Image 1 (spheres, one colour):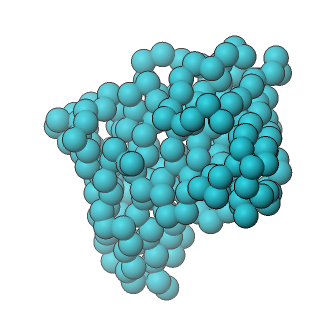
Image 2 (cartoon, helix red, strand yellow):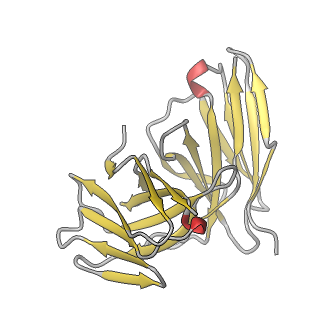
Length: 115
Length: 108
C-alpha cells in the first residue's frame, strides 16, 4: 500500500514564474492538506481540500491556489514566485472527520528553490 | 509566526541520557500532536493528546498535556541514536499549527 507520494522531488524556478506541485494521497484517504516548511521552521498550513473543494485556508496570499481531482489527488499552484517561496512543500492526506484531528500522513515533500 | 513555542531549539545528548522537549502556547487547543521528522522526509505522527492533564507513554517516550491545554512536554528516557530527528508539536483547532521544532541529536 503506497503512502503519500509527491512530485517532483526537487524544483528550481526563477522569480515571477509559476509552479505546480502534485500529491497523491494514501489509499482510502479523501482529504489533502498542503503545508509550507521554510528552513528551520515548522510546517505552516496553506489549505485543505475535501470533496474537491477548499475546506480550510491558512494565512497565505491568493498566489497560492489548489485543486483536488475526483480521484482525491491534488495540485498546489503558486503564481508570481518570490524568493521567500523557497521552502519544502508538504502534502498530507487523511480521512475526512469531525471533532478530533484527522490522523494525517505526510509525504516526503517537494523542495522548491526560487532564484 | 509560530503560535506554539518549542524549547530548546537544539539538544545534543549522549546515548543513554534522558531529555525533555517543551511546547508552549498562549492559545488553548482542543488537542495537541507530536511529530518526528527526519531529513528528506515528512513528519510522522507520534501521539495525539486530547484531555488536559493527560499523560501518554509510548515505550521510552512520555507525552504530557498541560491542565489548561496550552502546553505539552515530550520526555525520552535512555535516548538512542535512532531517536535523532526534528520533534514538532502541533496544536489542533480545526487546522494544525506547528511549532518551529526541536532538533535532537543523540550521539553514540
